[in-house]
Image (cartoon, rainbow, N blue to C red; front, side, top):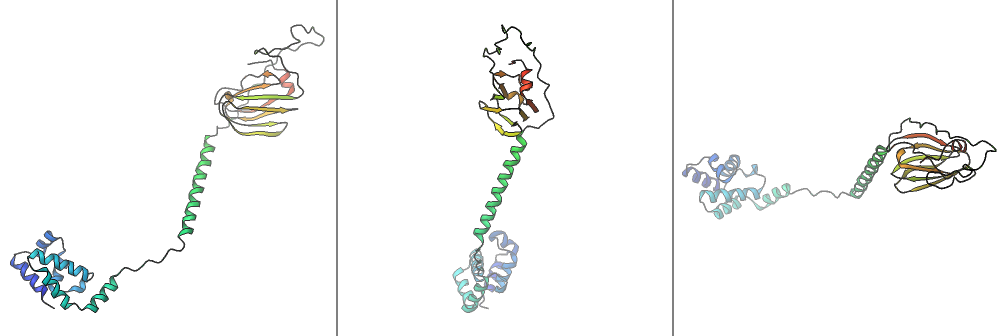
Length: 256
């Protein structure tokens, strides 16, 4: 012991200060102050802390801090100091060789999460498919065989265009609004997805055109063999199993 602790303790008592009083001024815990006064430096984290505490404490008490540090150095062998500093030195962290793999896995999971959310969102946006089936098309008066072709030889729709004479079914579907639908022609699915406003879909079959599901009935304008059909329903209304055949078309007036 070189005696620096005794100098600190005597100077504190001469000023009439307790360890708690000193703590309030220099923010060093009483435990460490007592350690300095008793020169029990092994209780401190290392020589660097000891020198820092000694310098701060001695300056506060009005002592020569350089002298206090020299006395401390004389009582603390160099080899012991290096040994303590070595023990307290941080342990180098090992290299994380798998970091790229971890990042790749996290990126893959993130992409999968985004794709999953997008898919679920699209499903939720699809209109609920109800069990609505539209009423049959109204039948129109039929022309008797052998009757005079006058006034009925040229069947004219409300738009003023003549009804086309076509074998089978030729349909033109115009979309006034966005719509999701599924359509079969002669039993084969030809449309299954979204159609946007302003788009036109042409369909041609021999026996049957079936609108299996229409998510927005008010979005469609359907013309078959030149005949403009009545709307399938109102906007946002869901329609299922709407079937057009040559027979049903023959019974239908040209209705806008």
